[in-house]
Length: 399
Image (cartoon, rainbow, N blue to C red; front, side, top):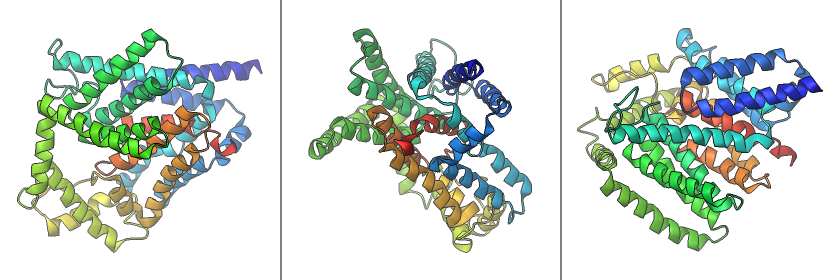
């Protein structure tokens, strides 16, 4: 018994550390992941672990999603790229189930506090670079200050952290005045930071999560919620548009690129539209099982050579739905969407409002973001998704 208690404490310390390192460093987070996995694999009690995993529909859905990728290797010609995809997706086979068996709901506050503390550190450094108090480092520039990761990952993580802080402000009645003031300060500073950095997907999900939060705050008052949303979101948008040159530039650029797509296919939006058109041709030719786990780059190159030879070949269409449909067809996309369906369904089983609300927001966030990139293939966002999912939906099927 003492051994099991000590082991659980060890896990919780490691998980809190992982939550902290997750938005800050790839190598640090990966080191902790390896340590957690080794301890889990060597700690015995395998029958109990196995029973926990197979008793969860969400764990089964995650494992099946990965196994379909393995199955897709059968009709893959490019084995090396297929193995690369399997390597990037291994969280769904091993890490997700491992975390699921060791997270403890008593420590959720510590997990989330460590995560928010780390995001606040990234935000502070972002402002230090932006105000030119320190020199830009790593990924940061003065115009786009995201030092610890690219804006593609930073803004979605920042948006999720902002939602968590705002949820505490509106619903946690036990926060003392000093802590409440800190939360309010960071809610404002994080919201401003959202628009001085350049991640458009993160900015979009910021608005999505603010809309959901309004519905959660004004529970069952749908008319009032809609009125608030129609006033609040445009106010935030236009305030950011006129206050942030970078945000204004990114918005104007996106509008211009959509309007002039046919004449400027080499732009960011233009390329994404072209990626989608070529990828959908691949999907139509292989609708049920796709081209295989590793063959997207080669098959896309063949289509691109015919349809748009002046444009670059790609390894990823910057859309998770398109990528999975191309690789694994309807079987793959149904498997992937089942994970998000179960998350939303299971979240309603919780009697804890915080867990229920965040449990709905997390999948909604990714369902929107994945329209613009493969956010469950990237390190930072995939780890955030797996980590929070491991405790947000645990035991809901038994409640």
